[in-house]
Length: 127
Image (cartoon, rainbow, N blue to C red; front, side, top):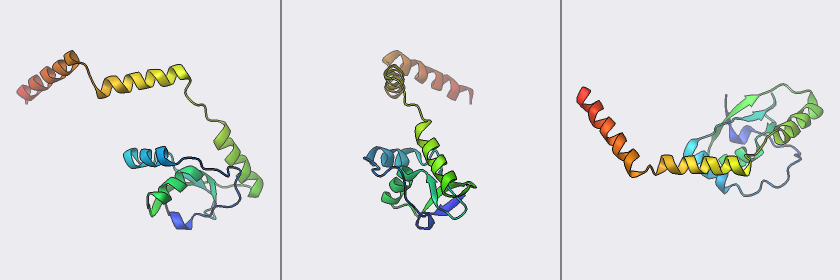
């Protein structure tokens, strides 16, 4: 569901420092919002404080949100903690592999470019 960003209320949070939002803002500009923020029925933020802050700084009026029922303050706190501790960052090896694959896809070698061009020429001949 789309919510007006100004309608989302931010109550007392565990995370005080949102950190540098520049990379997340760049991701939102380039790829959009991949994971909606989470609010309760009163539109109080449960999860996605950094995403919401980044969207605000980008000047978005609306943001995709998931509405969850919570059992009061305890339920909201449990969900906020769960959201932030159950993530697992890439290992150094996984991150290196991802960067390597991205580089190869962004900058294919000469023979790969040649092969892709040949495939496109034959595909166009068949059309």
